[in-house]
Amino acid sequence: MEHIIHLSKDKKLKPLIEQQASFVLSKRKKIYLQLCYAILSQQLNTKVAKVLRKRFLDLYGGKEPTAKQILETPASVFRSIGFSNAKASYAHNVCKFFIDHKLTDAKLHKMNNEELLSLLTQIKGVGKWTTEMLLMFTFGREDVFSVDDLGLRQSIIKLYKIKETNKKQLWEKIEKVALKWSPYRTYACLYLWGWKDGE
Image (cartoon, rainbow, N blue to C red; front, side, top):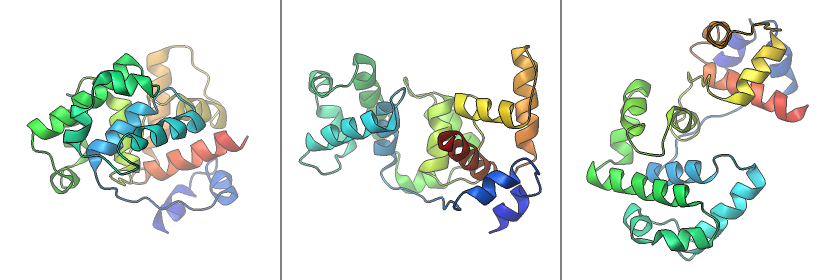
C-alpha cells in the first residue's frame, strides 16, 4: 500500500492511519446517476440521504433509471418524495447535459481531473465541491483534495493547530499541508473524515 507508506511520513497523520482500516477506491458506472445521488444528499445527513435514495429508486421499480427516464419524471413527482425544488431541477439539468453532450462513462473516465472539473461544473447545480466528491468516490481518483469541504478544513485546523483569522491565508495554509500528501490526497481526506466521525 504505497499511499500508506507515503502518508505515514506525516507525523500528525500517521496515528490516524494506524487507527483506521485501509481504504480502497473504486470506479463506478452510470456517472449521471452518481451525480444525481450527490445532489440528492447535499446538506443532508447520511441516514436521511439513504431514505431519499431508496424512495428515488422506488419510483423506477427499484431499478437504476436511465438519464432519459429521470429527465421525463416531472419535478412534482420528485418533490412528492422529498426533493427540494432546486434539487429536482438540478437532477433534470444533469441528465439533460449528459444526453445533449452524449457523455458516456467510458468518455468521462478517460478525462483528467481538471477536464472533469471544468466540464461538470458547467451544469447548473453542480459545483466544485460536488465534482470533487465525484472524482473521489465515482472516478476513484487518488489525488483529490477539497478545500471547500468544511469537515476537512476543521480536521486539518485541529490536527495541525493552525491559527489564522484571515480566510485567504487560512486556506493557503491548509492547501500547503495537503500538498505534502500528493499524489495520495484522496486517501488523506478519507482518514481525516474517518477521524472526525470517530470522535
